[in-house]
Structures are given as C-alpha cells and as structure tokens.
Length: 432
Image (cartoon, rainbow, N blue to C red; front, side, top):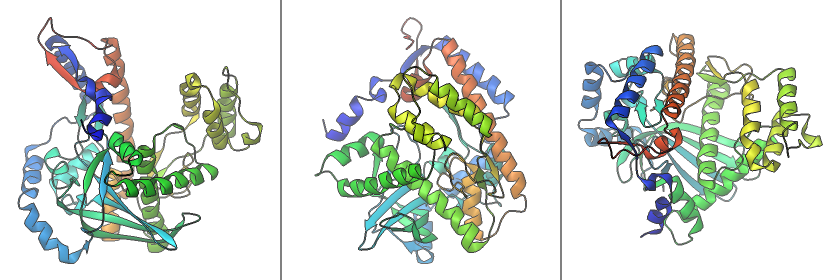
C-alpha cells in the first residue's frame, strides 16, 4: 500500500458508507423535499440550463487552445490542488516561489464566468440558487455538475482556463508588495487530498514536498500575523494542510477586494461582519471565564478576539465547543453588501470579499465578473441581499436536516464523511 493510500485508510471514508434501509431512505427523501419547499431551494435544474451546460462542455480543448494567446500561459508553473477526499470539483489551485527579496504566491481560480455570464440561463439559475447547499450525504449545486465537474474543475494534467491572483509578498511582513489579477491557462500537476498533503509535508522524497513545505511556512506565518493583528481563530487545532488552503484563500480574497477598492475604485460584493456590542462581548467572555478549568489571560481582556484566541489555546479540549458556542451566540450574521463599511469583525479585515469559490457561491461569481468587466452589475445591491438571504436559508436547512438525522438515529457527521448506501431490509445497519 502506498503512503498516500495508507493516509486515507485510517480516515472515516475508509470505513465504507453508512447503511440504511429502503424505508429509512424514503423517509430521508421526504424530509429533504419538505425542507426544499420550505426554504425555496430548487433540487434539479430546468432543461434549458442543463442543455446550455452540456453545450458549453463541447469542444473544450479547441476552445482553450483558441484562448491561450489572449491569456497568461502558466502551464509550466508547478501547480496543484488540495481538497477533501470527496470533493467533486476543484475550483482553486496554488503555486509558490521564493525569490531573493519576496515570495510570489499564485492562487488560480476556475474561470467560471468564461462559461457563465449574465447572458446565460446558467447565470439566472445561479442567482436564483445563490449557493451550493451541502446536506449530510446530499448536495444541491449552484451550477450544473456537468459544467462544474468538467471544464470548471482544475483537474490534473489538463489545460484549464483560470482567473489568477498573483501576489508578491514582502518576506518579513508578508504584506502585498504587488497584486496582479488576470485571466490565465494553467495545468495542475496533481490533485491532493488533505491527508495526502499532510503526508507530503512529512516525506522529504515525495513529489511536491518542497512546495508544500514552503507554502506551509508562509501560510503558518500569515496565520500567526493574522492572530497578532486581532483576527478571531475559533479552531486553533487545524492541521497544516487546512492552514495552507485557508490562509492562501484569505490572502487572495483580501487581495482582490483591496485591488478593486483602492486601485480601481470599483465597488464589489463585500463580506461585512458587524461586531457584537461591548455588553455582548462582556457576556460571552464572562460565560467563558465561568467554565470549569478555563481562565482568560489577564493581559488579553482588552481585545475580546485576542482573549478568545488565547483562551482556546490553553483550555481543556472538553471545553472547546462551549467556548466556541459562547462566541457564536453573540456574533451578528455576516452579510454581503456593496460597501465594505464596518469591515469584517471576526477576521479583523477593513475590507473583505469572496473570490475563491465561484462554483459554489454567487458572491464569488459576481466578483469574478466585476474584476473582468471593471464594472458592477446595475442590480448589485439586490444581488447582495439575495446572496445573504439564501445563505441564511441554506444554513437553516442544513441545521434542520441534521437534527432530523439524529432523530432517526443517524450520525450526521458519519453520513457526511462516509455517504449512505441503501440495503435491503434486514441487512441495514444504522451507524450511531
């Protein structure tokens, strides 16, 4: 067994799917239909949207060849994707180089707007849906999978159209020395799962070891700098592979809105996260301080975000959920707005917006279009409200479905990680 295969064998996915009876499967289907109706989530695409998606996947290689002269050709750059083992589409890839006086980090995002623009039925459908909805064991896509999982997926050893964010970072501060955003053609060298990426970091002889090691060093520093600046980190025990992807995507998202706001003077779909009131923060910190075995360091009380970070690092594992919940209870909802006023409180960013997931979020798709057109859609405010409302619906739908799974004796996490297999009566084995 290869090291990579071994890395997967011990995971939840290696245990095989959760087995349920046909009767229970019908029960789950009925519940999903009820929730989709309640939250107006369309399960399935209209024929014209599917037809359009099918058409856009025809003659892809020839179309990409035609595009090469109009774009930056980055196919020789070492590039790879890192995603969960069950990911169906890969919409972001990274490349990195260390130079004498800077790091250069490239984040390549699938160029979805090359295929999905305001003149298409797929665009109208994406606006209606606004996001992909992930239920345990069941996904309702924002874009037709026939498109998202083929030409918009940055699969290895295939030429793909991308929107690249090229960031030149100061070696000391990791601040942006220069930001370039442009259309490109890339070829991913490999698709890694998170556990494979961890494995590559461990093995000096493995392919992409040096690249992963370098990008982890940079990402880890980004993470520490972000924390020092007052960014809230509710999950302190994140592994190295997740740290790489999270920090690189945050850096790219921030770069794009920074570029639009300060260099181009163009509005965008910003992610705005208001702060809790001082009283709400005091309430949360008091609740945390009262937990058994938990103490907030005296020096950290002045900035609640730093206080939570410091406490989570020292607190016993059994109290982590309670600390996180105390914070989540007082946090206002983040929303999409056409003005960054107020910034993103949890991240402690003055300006922030989404760009790195155009396959599954309307906000990112819109921001790709704004960057490309250097102009905003006339109905930007309406689109912001739509994306905010539908995100809330998706989260509520997911919550209710998870509760229902527990009511019928299924573990939502097991279903999410391992999927479901329907077996004949008598053979079903519910996994609690």
